Image 1 (tube, rainbow, N blue to C red):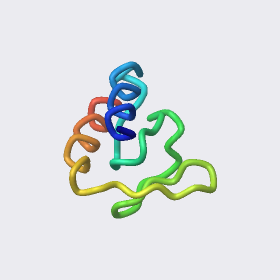
Image 2: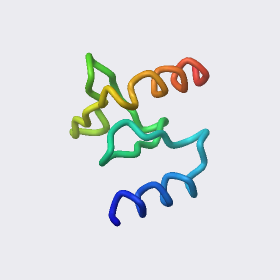
Image 3: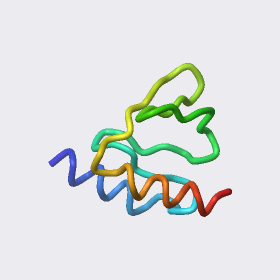
Image 4: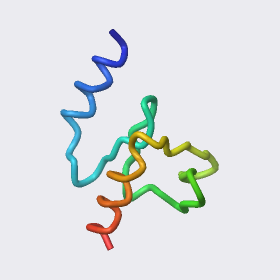
Length: 65
């Protein structure tokens, strides 16, 4: 039930500004401070990038360069 609602939330957010990076995380692309290995830093918070979302995450990042 929760993941279904999370998917609905993901679908309502503008794809140009937000991306899913983990089953439990959607991030605002413009808030990403750094990317190291399989982790994103936003502010003082580190967020994992899961293998499931890794490829699509880097494709979207290349479009934002």
